[in-house]
Length: 283
Image 1 (cartoon, helix red, strand yellow):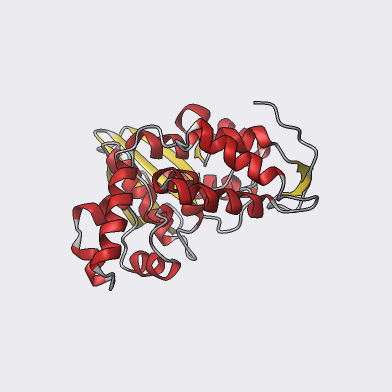
Image 2: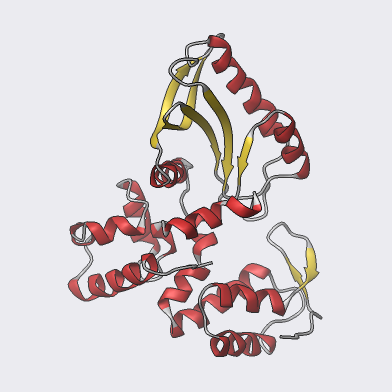
């Protein structure tokens, strides 16, 4: 599909770039939109966007168009923004990451206090399997385009090292890994330093073969915030009750009743939720 890229648009970080209709088309296809749906949305947007428009505005328009045609595809398309809505604090994001590693076969805990050699450290997520222990620092961003820079792994490395220097974690665990997890991205310096110090990084699209979005897709473990049939206030209510996964409302339908959702909307929400978690290769 060839589309001209002749509109300068504003990215979320304020920088300007030429908008790629091809990338938009690909993202729609990757969200399980049909070829006809993706082409139709791109063609409609070609006559609606203008010089200087924000990429957020363009993607919001594309989302609304897709939602009218397929709720399942719209949910997939909304996934990245849905992860960003696991806020305004970072606690729901930490819970989501804990659930993600639990689904990968680890026992996981959140907000654990570990004693270092010098001071105590509150660890966002701890995941364990056999003789392996992973301690994770979660860096949640609710503003698009804000990366995690090298200052974070510099600081986190000293915390991880203090925990190791205590010596209390040597048994029964023989394999120890420190992680930094974000819904944003890492700068090149942050990646270089972390590789040097053997800190594992996980972001929306890094590392390529096991990124956050790839893990979510492989496990069909989607955040409740990517559902298109619930309101923003309802999303906040679910998060306040520590309900972060789409599968939670499928497995416990009474949660929707407790949220004050009537039977007609309840049925619509469940249809979207079931279709989403049964979707293969959402992104």
